[in-house]
Image (cartoon, rainbow, N blue to C red; front, top):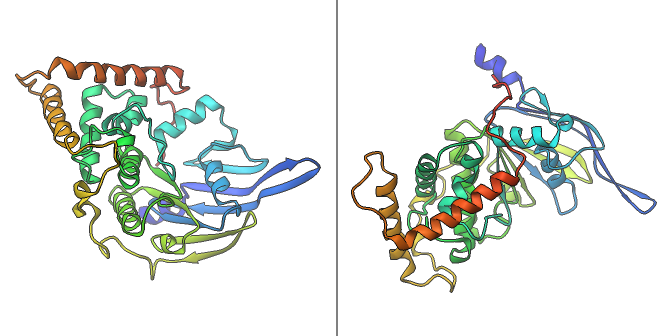
Length: 324
């Protein structure tokens, strides 16, 4: 009974959501009176063509854009009324993001990119590095941990993006065209990965796409046309389930051809770096120290992360009450 009552309370509730852009004397309705409810642990797809308003709707849910009118309530709190600082804290606590363009920081390695959300949460370096490595291994990137984005393929970069989105186990993950730049094989692997992780962690997953095949993974599909919900499709009786395609963790990620910037010698070097760093970060302290030549890159990463934290509006305080 308790579970049933919990399911009746939406994680995300939107009422009368409208977004109007003014172009000269003309008013353009990007969203025109959207009403929807998304429940905890659901996988939802916002499906529509380019310009339909689906990405604008996702941005509104994430607090990245303000509505012209209407309300957005997430876990009992009005996101549309929050200050920028409050929004930043709320996103840090409850949300993860997967982007079509990956949005990785070019000067940081995969490990440091993935650990960044944990840095915002005030997790100390040794712990967040360990968690980031565990997540990258789950995403099939055990040999790419110390590579920078330019040394990885598009599929590998998106896996890093997924690891970053899920590393802090947020209650909601927003994925905006997460497979738009990927080939069919990698698309299947990425979708399997996101769906499996969200199911295992009981997370709400909101996917924006124009691809009907991608929509097939969702519990419910919202068809968006001209800023309105044209129809809602219950897809649970025919959705694509994890396991119908090969497990992405078992896919030959390490054998994938890297870009030209990534030489054949770089992977073994990365493994050696990982081994040395693991000894330093291990609870037992390890007796073998990393070579001095490895310190400057790590110091550079620490400085860049420190600068990002200093310039952000997020603090380590968590004054948002836990949603039940």
